[in-house]
Length: 176
Image 1: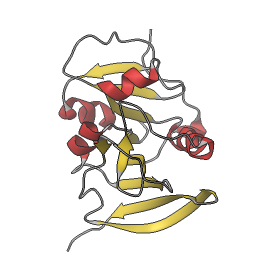
Image 2: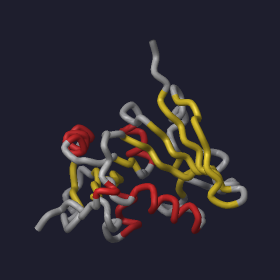
Image 3: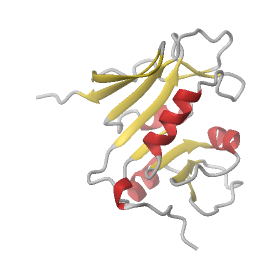
Image 4: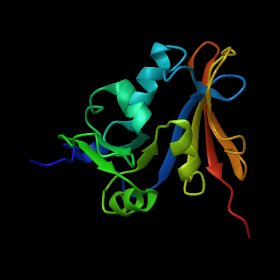
């Protein structure tokens, strides 16, 4: 039984990138009480279209909110706890280096999808950020993107998902 998702030629990436993808409120909040504190169908559709055919890495808490692997993607759960049973399209690894080693062997990009600790762990490895700015402030939010996550990045384009909901693309600036 293979853990790799079936990928069509259209979905295979010619170059390997590590991409952080996140939706944030106006204060950088990404979660409240272990859940995504909003639901925008346009953003969910954008996330699905963007990550399908690639690999996603998430933390244990994010995995527990999903309850099953995201279809048509290799799902990696980064966890030091061995309580998650591997299944088709799901791999459990305990270290960032193990995730990076595996990702380098695949013909697709690695999307870092959260949560807070996983974004922090991959911060120095991320080549590109895709950030959806949610037009609200979540009261009592308890999970945030790292404060400096866009340091050394510049916005290269944006895409309106629906009125007042925009995805911004950031590329790491290359220093001389």
